[in-house]
Image (cartoon, rainbow, N blue to C red; front, side, top):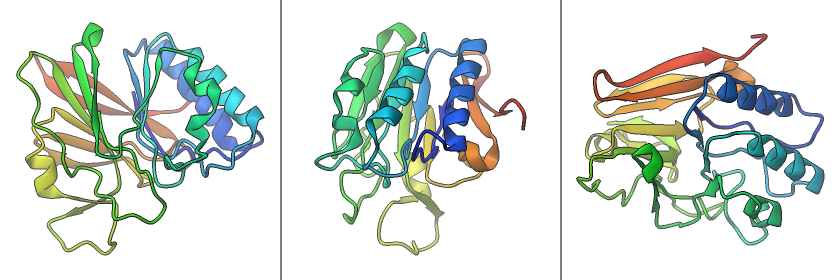
Length: 224
């Protein structure tokens, strides 16, 4: 399951209901992994009760969850992700390296690469430096939070992702965050924005199959 941009702010938010629904859906669908591609939180000034709620929801998952800090909840000193509760489960993985890092999940035969955003104003290029995957029989997934600009000149000095970066990445699937609506931006390799659950009322279900390749389905949340 691939989601992003919940922008959690306080316990009274609709987004908290969305998170609980997403976790329940992931359990019902028996997904092998959940990826949150940035901006789980709307900012870093998050109260302890919301952090406890979020970690409690994520601990309901029998599967690992991979979180990429985005531009709203970036990994600066005092980040919400420095709170001890995020260290309380070995199934919650936070991508922390600003130069990018690879997370291997051998039990799933998946390797995940991502680069966290670690500044509010730095010139961050989310896919710059993605390494070519090792030939090890695993599926290779990249996670990136930014603007897809295709082949056009970027309008923003930061957070942009060019088409050639996707094509040359060597990945099987690229899980994108930052834009609010569900959208495919590339088919070789497969790259999708999953959309913000609060606006698209959906998440992306991604199937990696030796027979059919990469298949992505927009899954509507209950009540949408």
